[in-house]
Length: 230
Image (cartoon, rainbow, N blue to C red; front, side):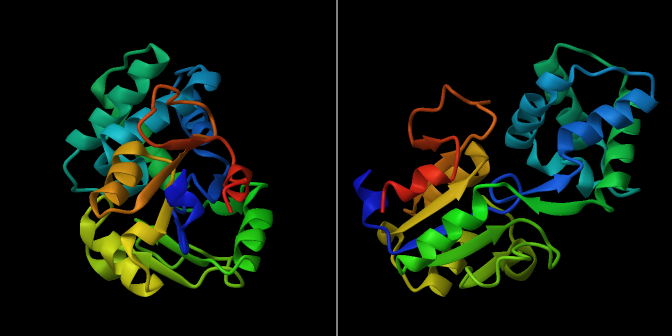
């Protein structure tokens, strides 16, 4: 807690932390599966998505392109389906991947309802605010120009989180030491371990209470919880 109170900079993940797609990931998965004759238990799909993104980030459906190795994308679906208590043939899982990937290219982004009030409050307190995203396009940070001091993407650094280089690039932009910096993200393997690996204090935002077992870092349910530490 002391590290958070003394932070001079707060860095954020984008997808799942500040912004979500419309329709959301769970809805897209359920829609595509339904059209293939598979009914997924909607209330458990989001937990499955978070488990799959944590364990197989390289298999996230929007990264699918024809000609790519299908193995990580199939593994992603297997992890997701294991969380919801289902098994599907390989060919059906691959069709789900393709369908979700196609629809993900047309999504719009929306902020969670706690984002703008918290960003405003943190900015008013003189903190440096930055964004670190594995998105390789210019969509990360759109709409937050008045609050963010910088955006660092894997596209410009050439490495995805949890690689140290993307976090170190953000520290350089923030002009703060790791010990003076906090980072908020929604994935344990990518965000928490990546930030911790370079000495940044990690904060896990678990909006859907999918990893209640995590106890080795600060875990919050809403961004508004950050304000009480400053």
